[in-house]
Length: 249
Image (cartoon, rainbow, N blue to C red; front, side, top):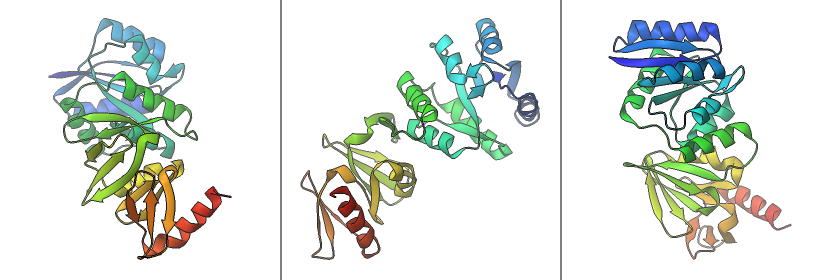
């Protein structure tokens, strides 16, 4: 039997989650609940659960305040957040799992299974999540990349380009490292398009700051300042030319 504590400031949401756990997850026992940072701290001082369901926005602070009070907590953490495009993007940048309110039975089950299999996110990934949530309009400094066997944190500006590899993505970094990530290029294109990255081809996403020239011959391709060439699709040519013109005005 696994123990759980729920920290959620909305009473109806708290009761719904508690009821869903009792009904559908008989191997999890909810041993306590709290509706604020202060209450949550009191509860966690008494008992450290196996799983902590932690709402991001609490009436007297945030879930991050809880984690700052208990930096060495060993509980598996399932973050709970309202459906918000900025929140979703923040969790993706930090490579941290979450469950969206309102959630389905399947969403909750998947989140619990993932939580059982992983260790608590390290402080650097928590910081990426926190910073991206607090200032969603600001370009994040770092991104967490989920490889087959670990999570690697890299500076966003060190990514030269991303290349599709079937349903996976290869990241090419400034220091010549290559990182293979088990998510599609579209996943990262949607994440990064607001931060100076352009999908120039079905298989290529490029950091605009590394482009040195657009060559119109041979079907059209980009020269990058690390010496590599990247093809540009016919459909993307006009957009690439327009963006590069704007950059050099």
